[in-house]
Length: 114
Image (cartoon, one colour):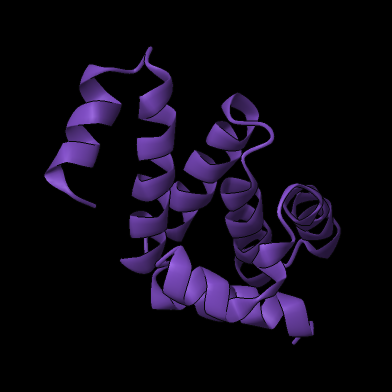
């Protein structure tokens, strides 16, 4: 998480931009191992950014791997892929969206149901 993401999420909570910064914060939290907080943040942001496929795809991966909540993960992934089918492609999240390695791995486990 960058300092600017933290500043935006703390100082400008009412701006729509802060929700997108919170997605980045959640991805960073996931990578550093604060997965409970990351999932909580993703769940919260998925409500305020309903229809933003990245947060739904990330939440699906995290729910599947960390919470063993396959049905909830499937629901989130359905939302994500209806909005943007690119999230079924691991190279897309890795190379285009620049997800952290641990979340890419979790998405891979979800997609392959392993």
